[in-house]
Image (cartoon, rainbow, N blue to C red; front, top):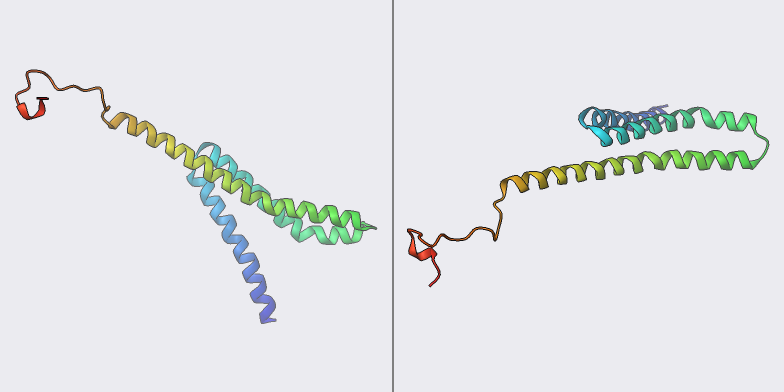
Length: 129
């Protein structure tokens, strides 16, 4: 009994942590990243529901191995999709941050090569010989 309880706690506890992290990501992000994280959260919930309900449905309502293969393929796709969506959200977020940094750098960095020393400069050390 303790082994089964620890297995259940580890399995569903890790799932709960993943879902909580996705919810936090959806709350803390904006735009496309929020949409991608929301899609990952939805796919993860569907994957959990299919993993919980699906095997009994496939065992009781099918006659051959084709349905089981299709179900396994569907579960595999549902397992991979949230990871791909979270990676896509990270890429979109990184690009958005890089674009904002470029805009700030363009506003704050002095332009190079466009400024010339005035000829009547009070400091003769800055003038060419």
